[in-house]
Length: 79
Image 1 (cartoon, rainbow, N blue to C red):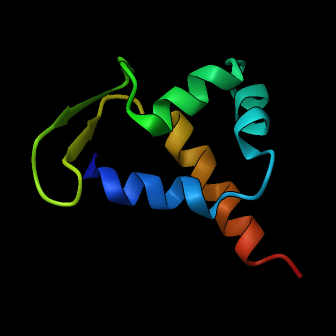
Image 2 (cartoon, helix red, strand yellow; image 1 turned 60 degrees about the vertical axis):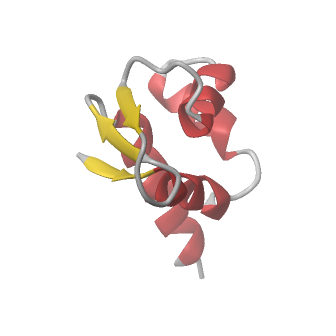
Image 3 (tube, rainbow, N blue to C red; image 1 turned 180 degrees about the vertical axis):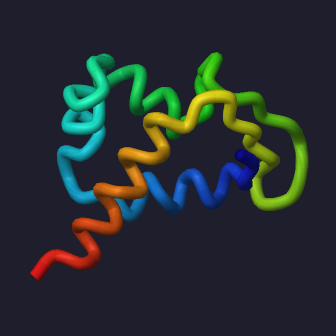
C-alpha cells in the first residue's frame, strides 16, 4: 500500500486522545512504537521516499494503519 506522509499524519491527527496507547495495547506493541510509526522514525514496516505531500510512504505491514483507520472512523461516526 502506498500513500503520502501528509495523509499518514492526517490519520494520526484524526485519532481521539489516547488512541496511540490503545492501538499499542490492541496490537501488543509499545506506545512508542506506534508513535514512531506515525512520525516516520525508523520503522521497518514501511519505506519512505522523497515526493509530493511530504514524501511517499510504501507499507510492508499495514496493521497499525488499519487499526488507526478503524478507530478514526469509529470516533467520527460515534453517536
